[in-house]
Length: 145
Image (cartoon, rainbow, N blue to C red; front, side):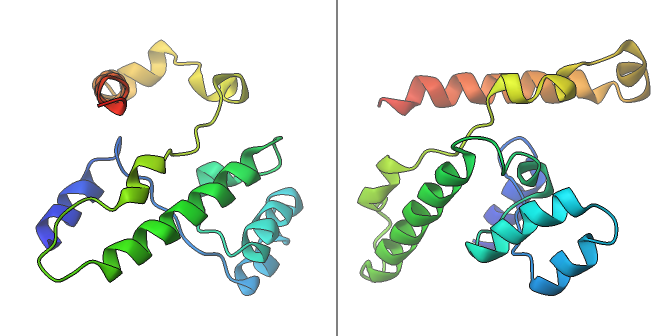
């Protein structure tokens, strides 16, 4: 179990690290970026675990709702897993409802501009992008099965 989790955490393209902000975290953010602090306050108010990456998009139409839906599905899945009999390794029924909230490409144009200088400094960027593409294709193929 521990090794499986450790392996997943090393797979950046599969795992997104999220955290719960505290009110103290938000208060300290205001000193540096009030806009980001306001978004973090929304996450605190809804008790949402969120990454700094997703925090940028929290004010976009529908994104908060998607995160709240995901949180509810995750809580249902966790409850089903905890209620399962010992030794049962079946996927919980709610797992079929899980869909990670995706950030639409039109919101990410500023991030997607890859320059030759970036690739020269970090050649693994292209491999990482190819791995992510293969994983998205794999997930899309196996989504309906």
